[in-house]
Image (cartoon, rainbow, N blue to C red):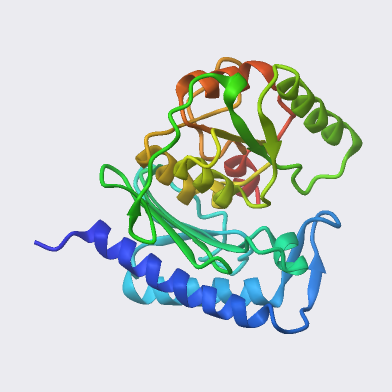
Length: 286
């Protein structure tokens, strides 16, 4: 009997690889950039082209599945079609971290996850320039270019390397909280804090054991859906930033991915949350 989730994973890998080819070619050319909510929130012709390609390819293969994407606004395909208790839905970000893409910083990523009744079943994260294909499937493990992934297992936060991002919001109060949170963690102290530029790759680095944790507030469901299953399948934990660490909520726009529960909960204890509008509430009202 055919395995439907493996077929979905194989299709996501194939379309992500094809999208990567488009992105790598576009990086060689002059690009047209449009601003969205802030000077750091961008849209390009490439991510719109890649998004259309992802949707059309997957829809042809799985016509009954739904889609949630970063920038789509077409009726019936928009990102407001979020996972429900009954739906099977692909949640995709055609070009993760467009600021990185615009500056040709080498961590441009395509991210495709599959949610089944609000639970992420599988994920594909393709770091296009590096040509690293990260995959994960619930109960089946996580891999990078076919090599099995495993988190570091570090439990002592004073021996940890942490990844975070500033995000696209440039409101002074938001920035103050982001910087204050980093200061608190540095003063524990931790070994260091790094920023690679994309939520998906940051989480995948945790899955490889290259870093011990990643946290961020202000990201969206399409940024982290695919990578969440990859971290978990590599033996890590994914939780909310609420004090003491709440259950991971794909729509809350907050996440901690870590090599251990101890480190995840310590980060949750230290960082101050910022007020955020949930993805499901925002998009339901669109």
